[in-house]
Every structure is written in C-alpha cells, then in structure tokens.
Length: 210
Image (cartoon, rainbow, N blue to C red; front, side, top):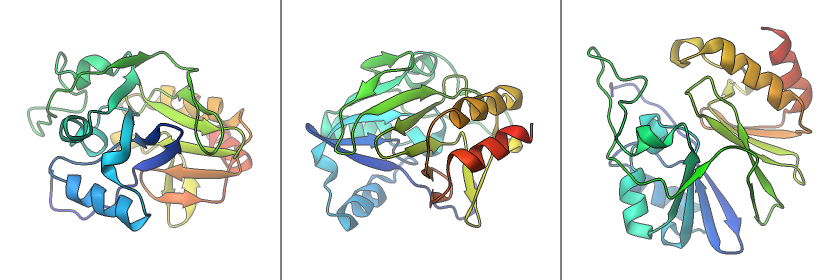
C-alpha cells in the first residue's frame, strides 16, 4: 500500500446470534476495527460471522486475523472464495504492485439471493460483480437500506458509480448498478464514503449514465 490517507467503512450488523461483520479492513488494522466497534458500543469478540463482499486488501486484509480471533463463520461468493483461500492470485495484483492477503477458509460459499436474519429485518445478498469477479452487496428491504461495498461510492456527500481506475470490469460493474436500481432504497452505505441519504432515484440516475 502507499502512503495516502484513506478512511474505510466496514459494517457491523446486529443479528440474533451476535454481530455479523460486512468486510473488515487492511492487514494489521484489527485494533482500528475493534476501536471503531467499541465507539458504537459493540465488541469485536461478539462477531459470529463475516460477510466478505470481495477480495480487495482493504476489505479482507485482516480477515484471517479476525476469523481466527473470533472463530466467526466466513461467508463469500463462490467466485471470490479461491482468491480468499489463496488458490488464485488477487485480480488486482501485478508485478508493479503486488498484493496478497493471508489465506482464509471460506466456510460458506454464496451464489446470491441468500438471506440473513438481522435486527433490521432480512438482509439479502445481491451479486454485484464488476469491481471484482464475485463482488456482492447487502440489501435490507424492510429498512430500505443498501450496503453497496464498492459497487457504488460516496464522494463529497454525493452517491456516485463505480470508480473506473479500480474496477476490474467496468461494463459489468455498470450492469450491477442497473440491478441495484431495481430495489427500493432510501439510504446507501458505501465502503468508500460511508452513509448517504440517497437511494433508488439516484442509483437509477447513475445507471442511466452508462
């Protein structure tokens, strides 16, 4: 990684079994994750599950450490599993900028459409490939909330589409935005940029830009 400052926004969802984390953070950032949870009155050790939206280092860099510490069940799309388990090289790794994460077993391989019980109502796993081959988002229909990971971004308070410079397959990523526009969303939470009170109407506008 380089020396640029960045703010990441993993998500913690309360469920009947305890916390379900949606993504974690960079390698060696477990203390930062734990402190952020504590600020919200939550405890990392209460995590029973981790939904990994995709393989990127900022999302899964400390996955192995968190999974080992909490013994949490690791969920990821079946397409992402070989990258998380070390069978395949990360898609954004190159000779110029090598990237790697500590291999971690994916306990449950998802295909999309799975639903988790949460305190905010059912949470649906929505396949949103493009940013990476098996990228997923999480949709809470009762709360009209979308956790978009890197399928969307928030920049200066505005909800925007995929970032071309870090998107593996831009056309597929734009098709995923079209998929998200079909859902009733009032609020969106992105890994880069955080929360914004914008949803279906704005997502449809982004989809129309393609």
